[in-house]
Image (tube, rainbow, N blue to C red; front, top):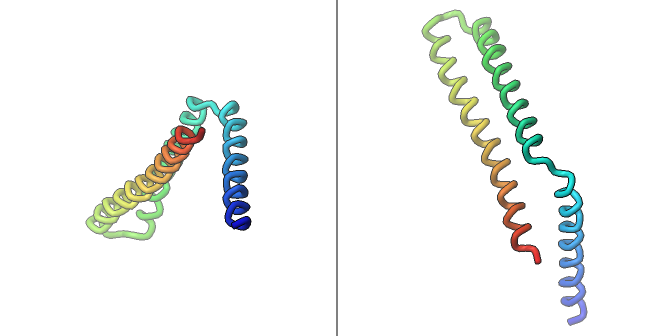
Amino acid sequence: MKNGIGKWFNKNKISKNKYDDFSEVSRKTRPKLTALKFIGIYMSVGSLWILLSDKVLGIVVKDNTLFKQMQLYKGWFYVLITGLIFFLIIYRSLKLYKEALNYN
C-alpha cells in the first residue's frame, strides 16, 4: 500500500514541476513573434525547395514530359511533408493547451 501511494505522489510531483516550468515559459512566450518566425522559416524553406529542386530535377531529368510529371510529384511530396509537419505542430500545441486548461 505504501508503495502505491509513493508512486502516486511522485507521479504528481513530477507533473506539478512540469507545470511550474510551464508557467515560467508562458511569461517569456510571445505568440506573434513566434508565429512570424515560423512563417518566415516556412516561406524561406518553401522558396528554396521550389527553386533548388527544379534546378536539380532539370539536371537529372532531360525529357520534358518526364520533367513536368516529376514536378507534379515533387509538389505533392512537398504538400504531404509540410502537411505532416503542420499537423504535428498544431497537435502538440493544442495538446499542451488542453493540459494547461485541465491543470488545477
